[in-house]
Structure formats: structure tokens, C-alpha cells
Amino acid sequence: MYLQTIVLIAHVGIALMIIGLVLLQRGKGADAGTGFGAGASGTVFGARGSATFFSRATGVLAALFFISSLTLAYLATQRTAPTSLLETAPASQSAEPPAQAPSVPSELPLLPDPAPESAPPDGANDNN
Image 1: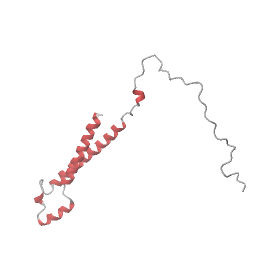
Image 2: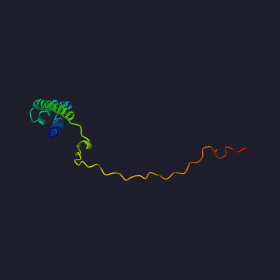
Image 3: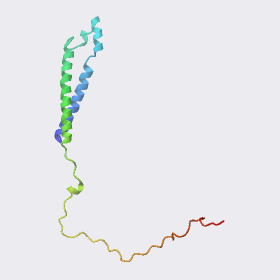
Image 4: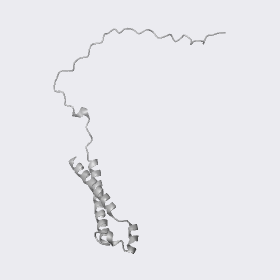
């Protein structure tokens, strides 16, 4: 239970770092401005160094993300099914039988007889 929580927190952290790295990377369209001399001034790691560093860091984080995903899937299958409340209830320790239900009278009142079935429905014997 605790291991799954730790892996889940790491998984979310890795996902947030991947999002940050992807947003920091420059797209392929940004290289179009390098022909006019504005390309190298926008990088911290040099003209080519940032792409390599961010690409490798993204690859490493992606591999960690896949590993944590597989670990979470494995941990989810190892959970035990919840037991029913009847199985977890303590067994009664008293040897006394349960209280008896109130006795039912032997003679029940009779219900009135239903309408006789031989009577025809209304209007069926109309001989007009």
C-alpha cells in the first residue's frame, strides 16, 4: 500500500518534469531564425548543446515514466480482494440459542372468498 503511494507520487513528479522539459525545448521551426543571426543568442547551453541535453533528459524521464507505469500496473494486480463483512465479523462466543420469535397463533382469520369465477363479465350475457 505504501509502496504504491510512493511510486504514484514519483510517477506524477516524472510526468510534471517531462511536461516542463518539453515546454523548454525549442521546436524545429525555431531554427529558421538562425540564418539571420538570432539563433545562438536564445540558448543557454550554446547553439547545439541545449537540444542534446534536453533530448537526453526527456528520453531518460520517458524511460522512468514507462517503468513507473509498469510498476503501478503490477502493484495494482497484487492487491487482495476486499473481504466481506460476514467473514470479518467475530464469531459469537455464547452457547445460548438466539431469542425465539414470538409464537404465531395456530388459527389465522379466514380471508373472504374471492368473487366466483362462473359469473360472466359485465355485458357478456346481454341477449338484445
